[in-house]
Image (cartoon, rainbow, N blue to C red; front, side, top):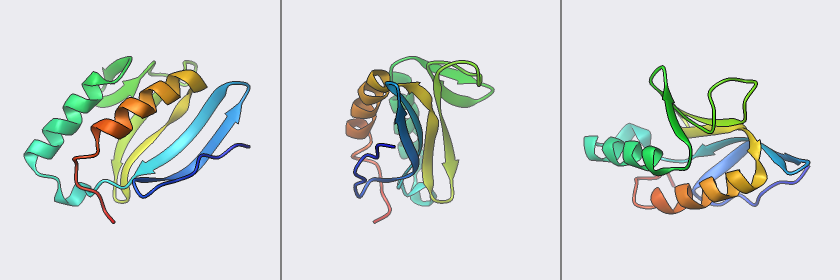
Length: 110
């Protein structure tokens, strides 16, 4: 199992690479309790700007929506913004690079 080095912006519940695929369950330490309307608007725009964005039953997904497809999903949790899923490593790295830069101006828990 390969693990990414975690930084102050997130921690991994799990991170595994198998045959050029990544299985990830990550929590970005966004301070969701102190988000204002403009922060939620910004996060929504970030979601839409990411590759292969899909909205399904009010939830954001990227790359697909069911367990038989390759996909990522997001959920707001007490600990922060959870991102989880399973997809090709190159797609995840591309998505992650864009996402990590886009969220830097949002409030984080430190």
